[in-house]
Image 1 (cartoon, each protein chain N blue to C red):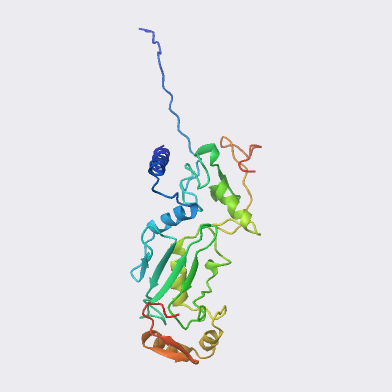
Image 2 (image 1 turned 30 degrees about the vertical axis):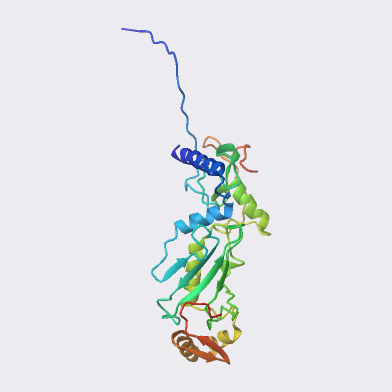
Length: 188
Length: 100
């Protein structure tokens, strides 16, 4: 019953807003994204930013600072572009901080199952954040986008560990490609 | 002792629910007893349906998802999606199927 009233109240509000001619009606995707964001409970090492202002939520940025694993100490910036078909279509996520990682290529494309073939509409932004966090804790060499990195991770794990931590902390060249220190900016 | 009561006026109040337990649809995150994004009114305009896996969604939400997929699977558990027949009055399955 209470819910019915709140639905009605919202309709009233929408009608009032429409009468004022102020608001453009939010798309279904935007409405759902709004719920995702308001329920987002980010861990301390993850932050979110809306570069186009708080009312343009379909494009935003997430910064992840892994607190464990090989990429600890780095900061990685991701851009999220949420389509209007959300949550039926997954957000487009890119890693714009250049990184030597088996599942991320030099253009910032990310190989994460839930961003493509395993996406389902019951998932949310927070599920993707967990997925990205996991990807930095345990890179997966079996399904590589950066084949060189995957090969090194499998064949000489000690060297892989060394070059990753060096590239993250200070920046270095790996196989002729320079990876600047991972400070959470656009370096891709 | 008896006395006569005359009812001059009465005011009926009823409430309804889809009885869907978990109170929001996993796809649109709107209340089951409310509307999905493309439903105008709660209730008959925004029916709730169940799969044989027992997961429930707004009819509009699950249909849109199934139409976009080649394989018909529940978005929660990935089990093969089949609409469950509605149970009327808590009795055994009846002909009155929801969302079939």
